Length: 285
Image 1 (cartoon, one colour):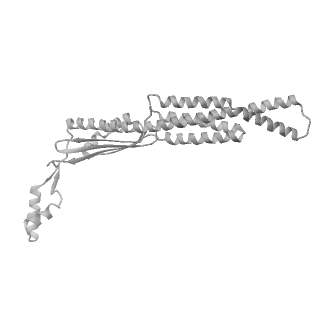
Image 2: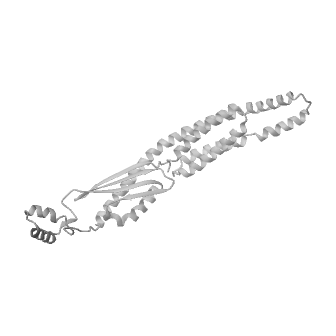
Image 3: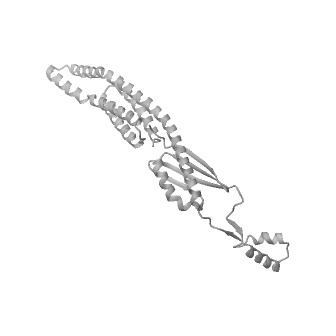
């Protein structure tokens, strides 16, 4: 089971005087990169929110937002009536005008409006916390759905590399014989007498130097380990990345040792499949 780092989660809470919307967006990132936006009244809870998000989302570029929309006659801003009346009285002494015009001017002056600082209702905050957890769950479900798509793609590409590797294994005896024939032809073209026993010894040494048996076995093991890791209970994109690096190392060694054009063409195909795996691994949690 693997999770993508890409996802979206949302939860909406309707309270008696306001509607609260909680949104979570996630993109791929090497580490946890968290950006939180919320009204000032909830700022004192930001550290607690960040801890919950870090524990449950682990990694990724996370955008967390709380939006509040008033749905009833509830405001924290009030008119400072005595101050406004005093402003209007002073304005009458300066210029004539009806009360409505004077009021329009008076409310623009300093201290004409009072903003009462809201305090968090802990019971209300408990409800909001539950909604935050629902938004996180929604995001993780989205990540899991994206992860299933990635998992299918990985499995198909691993099978493709395995099939190409089987072709490499089947071609290896032909490659060795081709190397033997080229060396023998090269020696014969020298038109010099040579010790056949010494030639066979040198040939065995040369072929052993370009033997790819260990690389084929290790690549098979890495492919199996990659598949096992995909099917494990935990999603670990970094671990899969390390395995893919080992796969690439074996494929490159096979290519450098093969010394045989048809086999090198197969190596290029394996490299192409592996690069596509590596690109997708950047999105895995």
